Image (cartoon, rainbow, N blue to C red):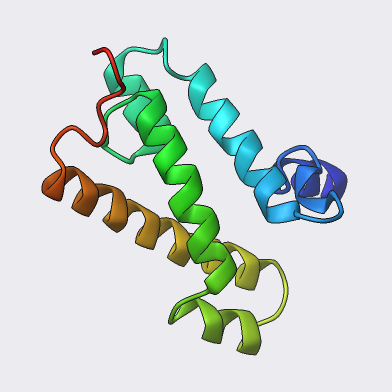
Amino acid sequence: MDRLIVALASAGYAGFLPGAPGTFGTAVGAFVSLLLFPLPLPLYFAFLSAFLPCNWATIAGGFLFFRVFDIIKPPPAGWINREMKGGWAVVLDDAVAGGYANICLRLMAAVFPGFLTPPGS
């Protein structure tokens, strides 16, 4: 059972790949979100709960913003990373990075209305 939990939590062990485990894990998450595109909108939101447009621009922007915030660890992510240990620290640190990425996507969409609309749509 522990192996299954670790496999799920690390995106099929992608989060353990050397060099850039966070980037590999995030890439798996982006790929999974692409697989969810065909779902009806309510079911898609039930899985992602992001309430942003479902398109390539959102996935790419979210990926990039998340990675930046996961690497630089702005407060309180830096504190969580330094002071907490174990799986909860990893999850909370990522949740903070995800929250900042979400805010940035929304700000970009507000300032640049076509930002989350892929070219040609």
